[in-house]
Amino acid sequence: MFSFFRKRPVDVPATSGASPASAPMPEAAPDRRGWFSRLAAGLRKTSSGITQVFIGARIDDALYEELEAALLMADAGTVATAHLLDDLKRRVKEAKATEPMLVKGLLVDALAQLLAPLERTLELQPDGPTVMMVVGVNGAGKTTTIGKLTRHLADGGQRVLLAAADTFRAAAREQLAVWADRNRVEIVSQEGADPAAVTFDAVSAGRARGCDVVIADTAGRLPTQLHLMEELKKIKRTIAKAQPGAPHEVLLVVDGNTGQNGLAQVKAFDEALTLTGLVVTKLDGTAKGGVLAAIALWARERPGGPVAVYFIGVGETLADLETFDAREFAEALLA
Image (cartoon, one colour):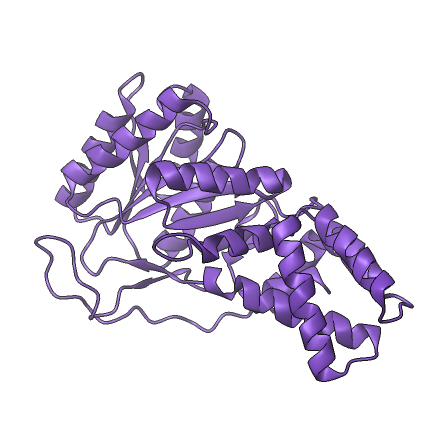
């Protein structure tokens, strides 16, 4: 099975008290053909509205107007749509393209270039534990995503400990416990306890037990719920007290169905927590997959550089979550 993760290379500074880094983890070359088929199928509702513009079309203003409407319907947003159309017109002129299918290929190139800065591999600390804090709104798929990432980590030989920091919802703790049992990993869970205290105990336990990764699940909340966002900040500060330099990853799980609202979530959570990466789920069944273009354009102006899109998901099975590849996504979106 293809590993999503690799150890940080030796030139990456270790956290306080860490010993020199080990050699990078070997990665098997993934066979992504099956994944590409699932991705293209999952994005079909988004892609159909865009690709039909090119059928029997002429390269004129009418084509660009229809394409603009299609990109907006796909929730690429006005700014990213304008950027893509300007870039496409430049490419068409330079290539002297006259065939609609060639223009579609140039749009793939433009989209892939826009998305490329989001593409990055999630790296583990050379001496664990790597602490990941997972956040998002209710229903985005946080706990399921944690379960999938845990499976791939465990299959890759990593020792994982889960922290059930969503202490307000019994079902969340139970769901995480099911994933822990299914993946045969440890879990720290305390009914009714303070979420920050649970994460502190989990990180401390992870260090004491020699775990490679600690993943903290958190309660879903809207960015407008300021008192709950403050609690997330408290959890992050508490993790840093338990292990200097942690959390190493603050991952936001975004429901692909939310479109431009997903971009608003990214901005709000990033402002509060300084995100390190995104996981975009439920891209299957949505006509709003173009939101990644909007996220990419926003990320260009983000202080500190673009936030990574580590993974995207198009279903509920383990095989339906994979690393994000900009070119692959662009080709699938316009397949």
